[in-house]
Image (cartoon, rainbow, N blue to C red; front, side, top):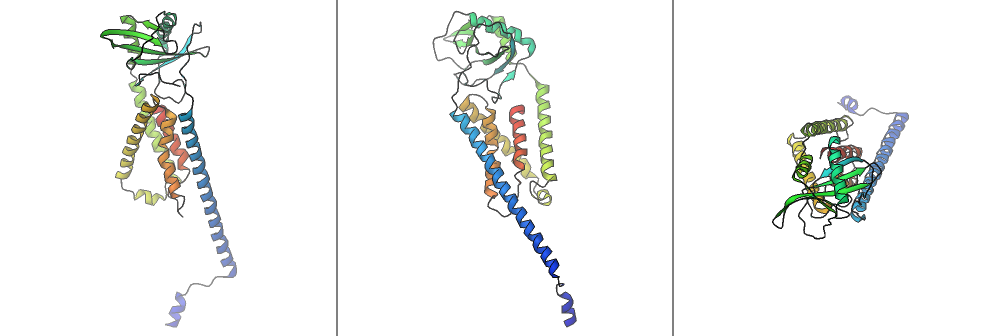
Length: 306
């Protein structure tokens, strides 16, 4: 019996083996501490960047696009967009407003003629209480000048009105029936194929991001992820869509249009809060490297898809 107990005892290790084990454990502890510091630094930098972007947008001195005035410069490009407010949208010429749709090059000549007619118009609108415009237009000229036009085709004071107004000068050009119909046709142009293509690419981007996270165990162990119930990712996707839709609504209410920086920044807020929550834990389930991957997905969703 004593001989059997001796066989069950742990094998004796030499001093050299014990020293190597100690160094190995100490090295792992150092790597873990270094990784935790990187987690704190990465999450902190992302949080500071998010706060800076939001504060910059909220306290920025907004301005209306200035008048193009008389110029011989040709029209380079133009956009149309929906304005749900009764007032013109400030800073709509900034790149981060994503609700603008580019007008086809073959339609620029017609729009440039409408803009010139508005500049030369003698009538100036001096009243207030206009309903929301049917469509707004933003024009960019080759010399760097910009022009913001609003188009109405509605009934005002029991009278059918069809006119374009320069936002900066309040000059009004009354449209003919043909011109009004052409402007409405511009604003209603459908791009079904391109929208479907963008949706397909978004699916590929999400799939690629998920594969990268799984390959490098950025979402925790692969075994634990595989044990996750199948309905949870589906529910998470629905929650993301609802949350993004709410953010778009808030952006429309506060800015009058879809502000891409505002929406993208707040889309990243939940993952940042999750990282701060897990900083005090000894084991990280989600790596900080997930932040730039999620950022790329959010950028595509905000600035390309919607």
